[in-house]
Image 1 (spheres, helix red, strand yellow):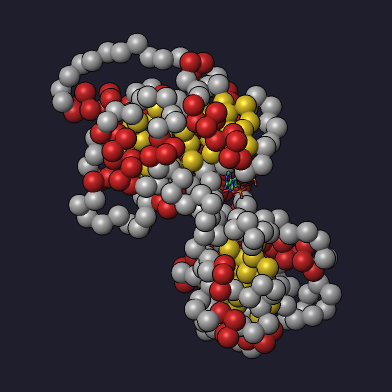
Image 2 (cartoon, rainbow, N blue to C red):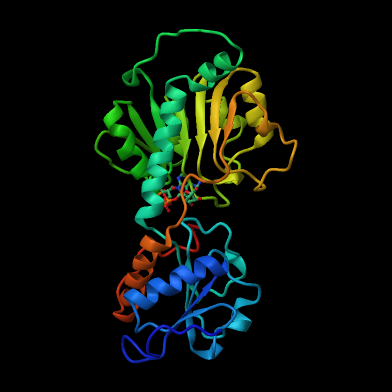
Length: 323
Ligand code: NAP
């Protein structure tokens, strides 16, 4: 069934249809929200797109195959996720603008996840759980947060939100990004020159980088050896950041103490993968944060209105950088 919410014209008067491509159940939620909040924006659910010639906007996790053949007048591809590594950026025409999703549902859930993971590692939960399971009562004097240095790789929307959430606990905080930032209460490092000094002082390292050619495999032996012995790791970026064999070797040598991993390559990990059973790996199935249509639709609607008004879009991807 074709689903069209509202009149065929809005903004400056052109016909500007948005198509949602994704799981039907989620699409239905998006459709209802658009009908409630932006009834004047023509909204259709893939594959019932009506006249392909009037479709200028597509919202999707990743575009369908041959998207340009299917939607010849497509102008903007709105990714419904925060990262765009799943988008075939190289094969999409250069005139197509790509916008990622920055919305409170993703940001707040990630701040919660990183807080949970850092506190869990900081308070020795991997050790305590193992002791409990072995039937042992093994008290240890807890380390103070003020003595545990936490470093975040990636100082974008999510990295900054994670640092904000960690700040009240009193951890000495640092961050590393491509360019050097200035953030109150956070020691900031930038680029290649800042990589080693940043890592040298991370007792807990959190990865919240986008996956690009420059960051693929960044959590490797080369990085691990620069961390203090016994450092711990949280990867909530993408599975492609981590070299699994290097992590297993670093854990088995004791150089890395424990790790919490939300993202893997591939997802799901195949049965029998060592990450499922390694005593120092705590694995969550890519649940750190997820786009909430309820809050994300408002962001998309705002962006469509910005487009109509010729204003800057929130979350536009720089295709040369890859994020
Ligand atoms: P963002 O706002 O684009 O920020 C990216 C940050 O990474 C920026 O600070 C950027 O540096 C830095 N960066 C990029 N390339 C770099 C490089 N080569 N070297 C050093 N720093 C580099 O992204 P975000 O919204 O925070 O999201 C980050 C990632 O989180 C997403 O791309 C996605 O992969 C992941 N994510 C995971 C989940 C989950 O459930 N696990 C959910 C949502 C998102 P500059 O500031 O200098 O540009």
